[in-house]
Length: 95
Image (tube, rainbow, N blue to C red; front, side, top):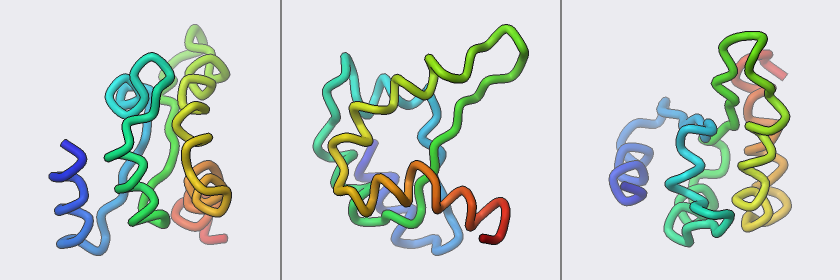
């Protein structure tokens, strides 16, 4: 799957990927980041954001977001900052 995502990102300049909690089990199963996914995110650092998919008051955002930390830790510090914050601010709030 990372190969297909990378190909889509290469072809479609306006495509962005949400690394929501539903994807964490694929990109960092058992807290171990998948190297191919790390490579795709490092290759397209301005095209990834983190989402929680928290859809109601009963869903706690904190535990959902904590699950992505091992993956973020595998990224370079500049890419971590983009994926964890700057990309979302740029895309959704034009900052």
